[in-house]
Every structure is written in structure tokens, then in C-alpha cells.
Length: 393
Image (cartoon, rainbow, N blue to C red):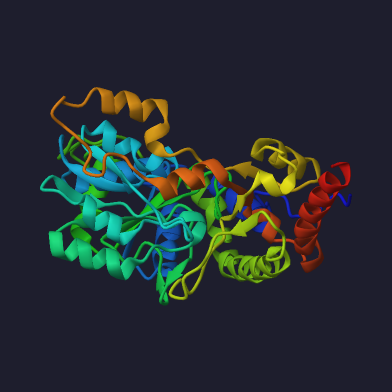
């Protein structure tokens, strides 16, 4: 079996550009965002990249959600619609405010929120929607916006997988009221940790800035604390690492698009493998994850977990999908502590989400940054595993 170890670029990538920016920051003696220049420059560049007026660098994507929820004045008992299939961080900030994340089912092809299920889940308590652009495939923002407008709901795009992604040419995070991004180690742009929010609303931006800066407005010299904020500030060193990556993102997104198309063509005839589908309106899919259903019945009964191990043994960075958020222990504990009279509008019945959580595998985006031969090698490895199993039967 051909081994693909070392055939894909390392992640994160470190270049002389990152080194230069870091050294400039180091010797500037200005390591704090309030006195330095790197965070401000990065915010300007990141906002411009996403066709937004404002960007705010923060500690991580989870905190970005928290800041925006506070800025939207979400309070205890409010309902916020989230996908049932997403990383738990989409829901945790809602829970921490005493509001209720309502898990709603997804489209079984795109793995993004199903707008019709969203409409069915709206109640008198609903105040907003957090659509997740899963793996970089943007949600159906047209239909979600129609629902938001009809019921006067905010839309906060969870674009933590979708840096530079597009829906009908509109950039991720700029379509709803605000968007959030993550710069965690695995993400398309990374500083190890970190995050950002973007918006076209000065009011939202100003509120989020206050909350992230312990309640102090920009330039405050009098120790004003106007809201109950905290310290969610991005550091100058993180911004220094991110700045060069902003210049590489467009080319990397195009390379992932090109290689994902090749991989789709290669695996379309492999029984038991069905990749994430794509809507035409998703004009740029960032492919943070290359996701596909896995049917063990077509691979001699090899479990999904063992199949992932076999891919990793051949140098392919593969993982099983997230659990449904309402199947996690923390959500179950949260739900159990809700008032006895409360019931979720959809009774937490999310069959598409459940199927994805139980059957899908994902491959990290660095495997789509190699050359064409390495990309085809992923499909060849899957075929070889399948053939090896068949030969033993």
C-alpha cells in the first residue's frame, strides 16, 4: 500500500514572513493590542478580506460568539437556534448566558442547517440563529435571512471553518448581522489560538469592543467600565503570525477547491464512500474538512474508528465526525436542569444530524494542499484498503 506520509504540507505553515512580523513585534516593545499596531492592521485586513466594515480580533472563536451574544442582548431563557451537528463551542456560550441553544437538524447532503427545520423550530422565545458553515460549505443564507426577517431574529454566522468562503459571491461572515472566526491550530488561518468577529454594524462592533476590553471604550484614560466586560483581547504576537496568512488564504482556498474536485472525481465510484454535497450557490467552499459518509458494510465490516486509524497509518490526517451537541454530557446536564415545563420545540429529533455524527469521517484540509498526485493517492489508499479487505473475505 502506498504511504502518503510527508506528501502533504505541514500545518501550521511557518515562513520567513511570519518570522519577520514576529521579530518586528518583539523588538517594538509594544506587545499589547491597545498600544501596538499589528492587531489593528490585521483587523483592517481581515475586515477588507470579508467585505465587512469592522473586525475585532479576540482570544478565540468561542469567545467571539459570547461577545456577540452579549452585544445582541441575549438573556436567560431566550432561545437561539443552532445546528444539531456542530462542534460544541457553537452552543456553549449560549448555555453560559442561561439562554437555550435549540439544536435543529441539518441537510443530509451539505451538513448545514436545514432552513425548513429552522422555521419549524421558531417559537416566541427565539431571538436568533447561529448557522455553521460546515467544513467551509456556506449555509443557505438566502432562506435563513428570509426566516430571520420574518421573525425579527439576528443571524450570527459561525464561519470558523470558512475563512474567505462565499455564498453567491458574498463573503462568509458578512451576510448576516455578524460573523465569527477561529484561529485555533487546525483552522485555515491559525495563531495556535485566537479568533475574530466581523460586522457591518458600528453599534454591534462598539458593544463587542467594550465587552472584550473589560468594559472600557477605545482610548479610555479614566478607567471607565461601561459594561460588565472581560479580557478577550488578541495579542500583538498572534496578529503578527496571522498577517502573512491573510495574503496566502485566497491561493490556498483555490488549491483546496481544485484538489477537492479531483478527490470527488476519484472516489465517486468507490462503494461505501459518499462525500459532502455542494449547492451551486456556494461559490467558494473552503474545505476546512473533506467530509464523507463511510459504510462499513462495503469495507468488510471495518468500524469507522478502525478505518480512520488505517488512513492515519498511511499518512492521511483523518478523524471521525463530531457528536450531535445534544448527545454530549454537558448538553444533557444542561437540559436536565431546565424548568420541568420546558420542552424543545423539535423534541431533539434530528435524524440527519444523527446519521452524520455516526457515519461521517473527515480529512484535515492540509491533505488538500498537496499536489495532484498526492490528492489522487488519498482515493487510491481507500481503494487499496477496500481491495485488501475483499481479498481476505
